[in-house]
Amino acid sequence: MKRESLRYIQNARQILKNTAIEDDYYADKKPVREAFGTAYLAVLEAINEALVKRGYGKKELPQSVDAYRKAIKKNLAVHNGKLMKEFENLYELLHIAGYYRGLLTDASVVKDTMKAAERFIKKVQ
Image 1 (cartoon, one colour):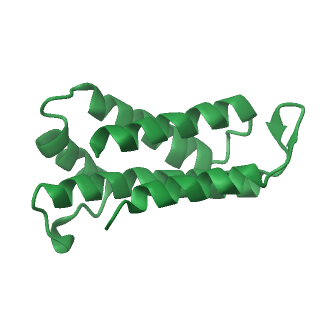
Image 2 (tube, rainbow, N blue to C red):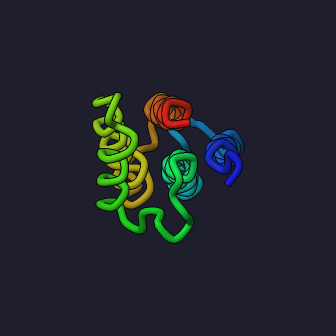
């Protein structure tokens, strides 16, 4: 799992780069949703990478969002209480609003959310 998280976030950015913006909104919702889904996977991969560094085996990695929450609290947020809040925010923005419901198409909101995902990834590495 060598820096898969960075590859995923770059893929998400590439998807957005190839999507037209009209009047400050992405014209096509489908690729934006795909980019959000990919960015969310990047966040999960970053957590996985950090857990592997702490001795977790592949079979021990979280399998649900609740398991990710527990793993963050136990292993990653010990010295950084903001990390859990950031994860919750990214979960809501990337996975729920962006991917699942397809609510986010404002170009500046999308770009800011991608930047937040990238900051989180760098923080947990």
